[in-house]
Length: 144
Ligand SMILES: [Cu+2]
Image (cartoon, rainbow, N blue to C red):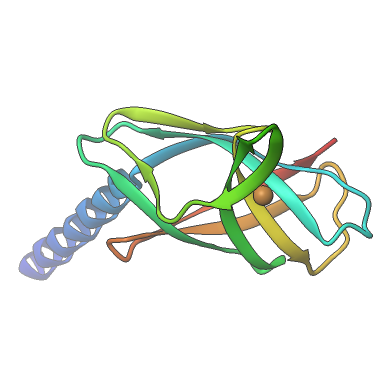
């Protein structure tokens, strides 16, 4: 009986260690994730966030998914011959020990085809996919 108990707590600690490792493995610290509110008739939204890589290896975001949008791309706003335009970035590389800010006029998420009405205060789950096959989910808030 005692033996069984020791075995059980040993495997339980192993599970806890594995859970702790998984939490630590969340590579990027993402804050201030928000979506600019627009009238319902507009077929896309722009999303912004602060991404911090506190690890000593670079991370590459190769894709983004959400059940609320038909597709999400990463774009960069650029000025060409005095004209503003956008071009896709893939992958978005977050170098070791650096931060990248997605902000109006710069890098942003281009979120196409909202599948539901969105208004300020609404929260949208998205999932970032990294080139190592891992994913990170986070919540974005719709703001004015
Ligand atoms: Cu764009």
